[in-house]
Image (tube, rainbow, N blue to C red; front, side):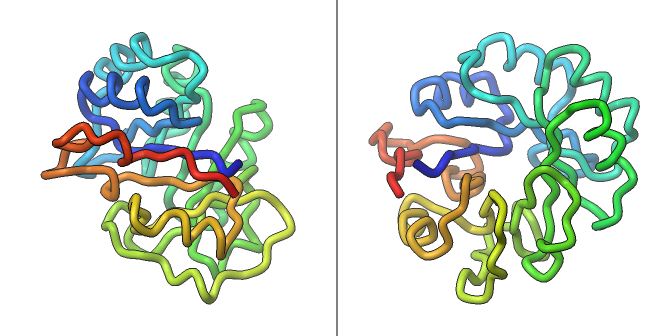
Amino acid sequence: MTQIKICGLMRLADVAMVNQARPDAIGFIFAPGRRRQITPDLARQMAAQLNPQIQRVGVFTTNSLAEILGLVQAHIIQVVQLHGALDDPRVPQLRAAHIPVIQAVTPADAIRCQADYPLLDNLHPGSGQVLDWTDLPRLKRPFILAGGLTPENVTTAIQQVHPAMVDVSSGVETNGQKGCPEDCGHCCPRTPT
């Protein structure tokens, strides 16, 4: 099965939603200036209420290595996701510390990605813009697919692209909040491959 990551949790209510939906991973955004950015204190509270079987990923842009390591050492996050330059010096430093690293890259840069997992996204991550799946490189290692995934298109994306994981955020929001207003139970379906 393709794994599922729900990124951009912002409220304690989001934790209740993901505990019910049971994705494989969630994302806390610490990147400065992003709409879904949260504080380490809020992330600590959410992590304490999160089902321990759900992996916690921290999402970063210009954050310092010391800040990232502090969040890992405090057991707030377990995996680091970086958005920035392909040759980001934090990637080898984090990998040397045995911390799993996801790096957001465009499809053109995926083959050169040095992180544990390339995350294929469009040029504007978090925008909800759909990535063109028809022009993706053939990767010989596990990768994560992001970019405008919704309950309506995620099954097609998985069937066409075969990612190890899909990363959804705005596609499972209603009025900027995670979850479904009707609590229909299909906003975060488990999708077989």
